[in-house]
Length: 228
Image (cartoon, rainbow, N blue to C red):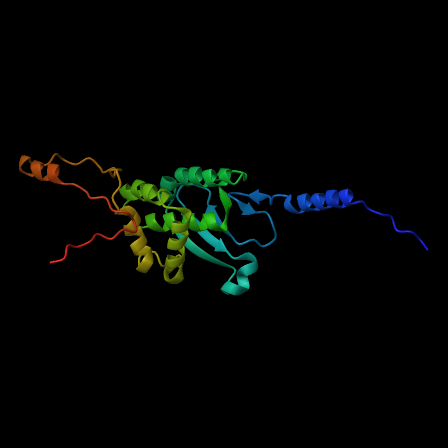
């Protein structure tokens, strides 16, 4: 009869600690673009920037392994005029990279062609794109500041409720898409829209202009009406 080797209690504890350490130490998932997992069929967003300076930029959501759940491989979420994309691209890159840096993930940068994003960052980006697609071009800095001031969870909530009924590329000027635009561009901030220079107002209108003021409300705050 073959004698089984004996293992001391101290050796058992040592092996157990090694097993725990191994299970907790997982190799981080490689990413491409702005945090998109470099795996087979991920759920991700894609920002397509065509060559040249005039063609619009397309934002598309790809469902990957969840295609069966959504009934389609992808949805074109928004087509953004090039001048509007240029107005938000730098701020988007900076803020998205700040988020990636917090998670110790590789940073991204916009390039001509296909730019892949983590699905959650893509949804947050889409909220800003929806807000500016038909907005007054001078109000885009206001939209950027209001969007940047939201928590990630608030942006994701806005994406979810907007995408439920008006989440396609042709839904830009109705329902929640229109409400989102007004919420992010007309909610006052300390940024003054950059307007084209106009002729100086008549003296009789000067006092009226000086008396104009704006009351700041939170995006989710409702102004109370005094009871009679």
